[in-house]
Each structure stands twice: as C-alpha cells, then as structure tokens.
Length: 448
Image (cartoon, rainbow, N blue to C red; front, top):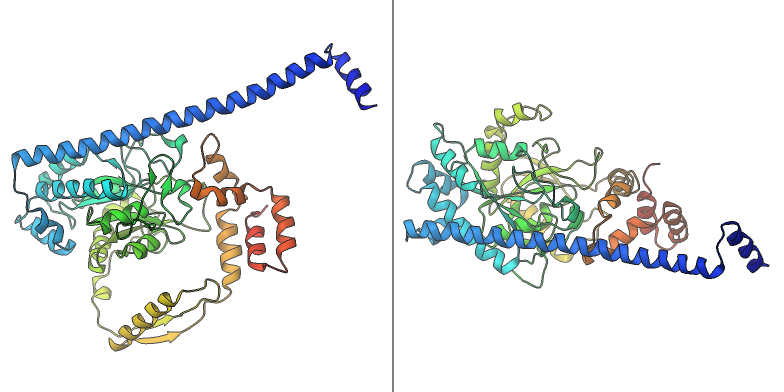
C-alpha cells in the first residue's frame, strides 16, 4: 500500500524510485559536504586568529627588545613590586618614567601569558598613547599606568570576539567610553585578555585562543568570565585591569586568583562600546569593574573614572563623583551579613571567611547584623534567569550558528538548545524530585 502510494507520487514528478534514491542520497551527501565546508571555514578562521595572536605576542617581544637596547637597566623587579598608589606617585614626581613602567609590564605580561595563556592581543597603539601621555599638560590620576582590558571592551582597531569565530571580522571603529576615560586620565591600555566562549561561563576557555589556567595552580581554572584579567594580574603581568560582571564575572576570577575586584552598581560606569553575546539585556545589567592587587588600587581607579569626562561621554551615567569623605570616614557602619543565603550551598571555607571578616569588622567598631536575603528562589529563577534569557536564549543561540561549541560550554549549550515545549515537559516531570532544576528549566523558557 505504502509502496504503491510512493510510486504514484514519484510518477507525478516523472521520477523512478531509483532516481529518487539517487537524488535523496545526493542531498544527504551535499548536506554532509556543506557541513564539512563550514567546519573547515571555521577552523581556517580560528587558525588565522591564532596566527594573528602569535604575531601580536611577537610584537610585544620586539617592543621590549627595542627598549632594552636603548635602556639596558629598567628596574624591573622594583617597578613590579610597587602597589598602584605608590607607582602613580613615582610616575607623577618623575622618579620613574612611563616608558620604563610600560615596557616592564609588557615584558612581564609576555612571560605570564606564555605560562597561563591569558593575553589575546597586544594593543599596538599603547606606544602612541605613551607619547600622548607625555604631552599632557595636566597629569591624570592614572598618569603613565599600564592597564589591561577584557576581550569584549572595545578598543579602536582591535577585535572584540566574545569567544565567537563570527566576531573575528568585526574590527572596532572607536574606543569604548571606559577606554576613552582611562586615556584621558593618563592610563595606557596595552593588552586584551581571554574570556570563555559567550562569556556566560565560570571557566575561561574558547576555541579561538584556548583555555587560560590559574597562575597559582595550573590544574585549576582562573574563573570567569574575566578569567584572563584575573590570571594576568595574579601573575604580576598587569597592575590594574578591567573586567565586566553580571553574575560574578569580576568577583569569581578575583576570588579564584587571590586578587581584589569590584562590581560597581549598574550604570555607575559606562558600558557604551562593549560587545555582548546577548542583545537587549535590560532587566539584568552588566557593569564594568576594576581588578587589582589591593583595595586602595580599586578606590584610586574609581576616583579616576568617576569624572566629568565620563559623565559627558555617557549622559546615562548619573553624574555622581567619587566621594572621598565617605571612603575615608571612620564613622562606624551598620553592616548586614549572612553565612548561607538559602539557595547556594556555601563550602566550609566560605563560611569561615565570612566569620573572619565579620570579626574583623566588629573589632574595627562596626555593627554587624545577620539577615537572610528574602525570596531568593524568585529572584534567581524569575528575575535573573528569566530576565537574562527572556527570549528563551534564542539570541544567544544565534551567535553559535556557524561556530563550533567549546567543550566547557557543551552542557549549557545543549540545555539552551532544547525546544521550549520539551523544557516545560522536563520541568513538569522533574518538579517533584528536583524542584530547583525544574524551576531553572521553566525560567529558561523565557517570557513568551
């Protein structure tokens, strides 16, 4: 019966079963060939990107070599040992030259990335910026300070990949606002650093530049998504860096690598000129945040960034300058704390760290008040996850088209890729046994 019906259909189109079989096989082969061609194209692009990165690192080495020919003794160990606040003082009083400091950090960054694979690009314009800094009549608060920036922070003439092959052709036409303000304050951006594919991952690996490892222990991750920054600063290759944070992307690498990081309140610093894997993310806001070796460095950085230049370049940022009187005040504070938020299970070391911090703050005269964050299940699942993936992750999945998926992203990608009806069915089945996973799957369906 089925064969007869098939024969009738084929006869209408003038095809015999044999010809139809050849056509079908040809289509299947063509499909396989097309996928193979696509994969080869992606691999070729990745190869070109790696070659470009290798050439970039060679340029770093040449720049250091040229400087060494001019000035053999560069006080490297002394410069690398200085905290940011002291380094700025010595640069401003001219007991250290910006050239010595810049090339010392270029050399050290090169050594660190050869060890842990954290630098993705050498910002060749740093040498031109060095000349501009020396011409500045008024020395900015970050005069002569070399800074590193995360991959997706826009820098003119360079690529913001977000870990995706499809972004390799998109060269930035202008600096991001944060880079413009840094330059105005006398800072010299000199390298870009590695990130995980899509930046929605707590590891630091992509198929273009490979994985970054923790400088303190090469068997461990530096965290993500600002993992390249964390690794470079912890290894001594940068004194001040900039990451971005939505759900821990500055705080996690800082914790994993033993450095300090700050996630400012959303809209406190400009995000104009930053590439993003997700468009229209309004209910959950990303923010740029500084990363450094100590808290005083973060304070100096925020003082420098919260200036008229920032408020003019991005009018959406509230024009509230850094308030020194609040930062330096010795007035006792009332501080809320918790050891367990009721959602994320803390490790014993985390609880111990909170208790130790609490005791130190009490000894300093502050009042510590325990509390439990309210309705955290609702906040995480409905406001955060559903807000982040309000379209059911469709926009993010589009970024993966024509790309290969990094092994570290595979499980997340597979979860995002499930059809919405299947996510809802799985959520219904799992609800009695794994209510938390069920809520997460429901949230990943988006808002409609």
